[in-house]
Image 1 (cartoon, rainbow, N blue to C red):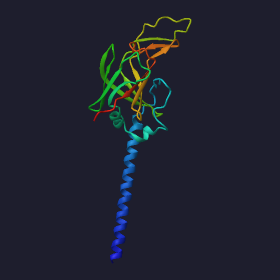
Image 2: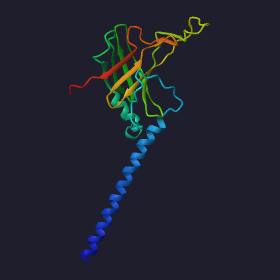
Image 3: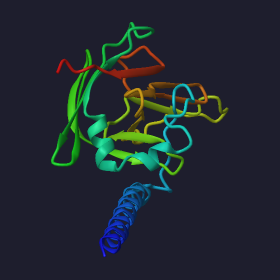
Length: 199
């Protein structure tokens, strides 16, 4: 009889373990689907400054929900020590009721607002700011070129690397795609790195 009780106890415990494992797998699947649901397959991908990938083999999709990514982005970002001598650029993010609040400070401007997180289907994460570019002239190499006087682009996209907590974007183009986003910055590629917390 004692052996029978031990056998029944083992079967019950094993059944509980299997149920817990199944529950964990379902939670993982839910976390993955949360990201995939938020993926904007029709989004236009802003250009990266160095062509590097922000993620490896779409690990970002498997590992984080959008809420977790928002919390990873929060922090204070400044210029890298190397290569950026003509532009002091400070960017701070806060989580305000589930929205990404930003504050940008340069030598020319102080602006703030709500940015959006855009996760494209290849796993890249972009932060989109509702900021008007300082200048846009398009392709100036055409024989029929005339100075552009229309509305300038109204969004700035920055590539976020979740592993290194860095942001980068291309600040101005060339003759075939002539534009300037922040004209106070004499840098083509602007790289920002999150400061380590003192806590």
